Length: 101
Length: 133
Image (cartoon, rainbow over all chains, first blue to last red):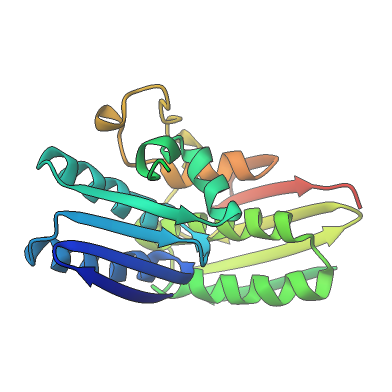
């Protein structure tokens, strides 16, 4: 997996490309934690170029989605590919964590 | 077409299985959607075994013929039936829903059948997915 970060003030945008497996989920968590420590108020995860998303990756997204929401901040999925959308739909979390356009 | 291999249950086992799966899919002509589903199911199970199963080694078999894919994963860890995990209650509000159990839930939903058996001191998980050739 490759992570590309774009930063505007306290808004963080992560583009994740490739395979989000166990090690990649850990890498994402490290990035998100660093963003939170740096004072991020909005974090967007773009999965349009992701080819695989395992449950460990979904857990990271859910955990920090909840944590930030409880603090009046946000972490949302900004875009998905059709394949990744299917995985999110099966977990039942899709409507909660994908940004509404 | 069939492929069987044995590997140690080390932290990179899921990655090794995924690479073997990618080669098999290309050679066996498994449809993209079936390959995608099976890739997830395999990764979830192997990662679970590595994280919790205490296994030393795994034996994985991929078999594909006439629109039927059959995956078998044998491990020598402690008895572990992933299907014992309760199905997550998807009707609960997000804040109340447990985050665990998602991997097994995905395995069940992505494959047509998932079957567990403890046999000869080993855990045996079999997963099947069919398509119209």
